[in-house]
Image (tube, rainbow, N blue to C red; front, side, top):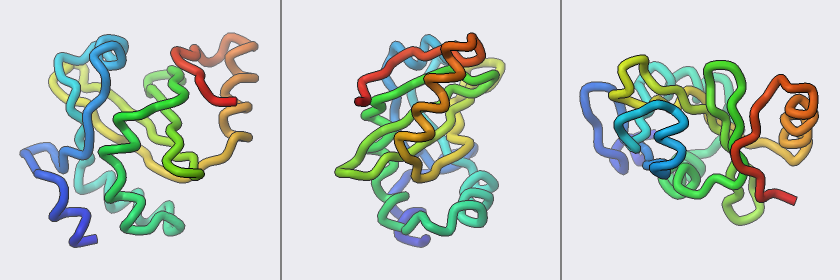
Length: 134
């Protein structure tokens, strides 16, 4: 994981792993577009998703910058992006002050996961903001 920690600059909140669009930042009620991964979230993610390789984490900036599906699920904004043929799921949460956006979860996923969100949206439980997936 040293390669990952060396790739991304670090500030007082964690590693700066990407940047979202202004539209998504507005939805998150954030004053910034910068996405931060805290040390604690990185450790939790490493423990919970051992299938992710360092190469997956090294693509975080590209993945976060190209979401193909975005929905709001409770207090989290969930996005899914395709990189090559792999689908990645990540969750973002803005601080109450809007000064930071945290990456709270990152994992591989499948189209079944997307379809679950679509079905929940039909029931009014999820708000889909963007859907360009087949």
